[in-house]
Amino acid sequence: MSFDVPEDRRYLGSHEWAHETGDVVRIGITDFAQDELGDVVFVELPDDGDALTQGDEFGIVESIKAVSDLYAPISGDVVAVNDALFDTPELVNEDPLGDGWMIEIEPNDDAELEGLLSAEEYDDQIA
Image (tube, rainbow, N blue to C red):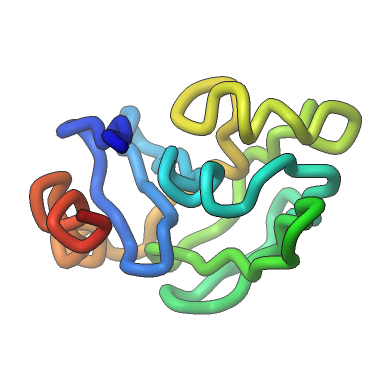
């Protein structure tokens, strides 16, 4: 099975993606991760203004099969949370790379983003 792994993002081995848009980095889980999880029924996310450190747990995704922790790909302050996921968690399955995004962070260190996996490296990992 082939999964969508956009070239314009960086990836964590734990299946989170990070996409830089201007001054913020939008974060979500990969197409592969949502497929492995199955139907997502609940998402727990941090609050606006929370400070995250790279590698920290920032929330959970619960599906009919499992509960998975979410890890921050970079350090920074949460500047936006996708509130739509609280009422419509299935967006994570329907559009994990778009409307199913989770949080936006104002990064502390741009070098952290560069240190993440490239699309090619992530694709090799899930192959």
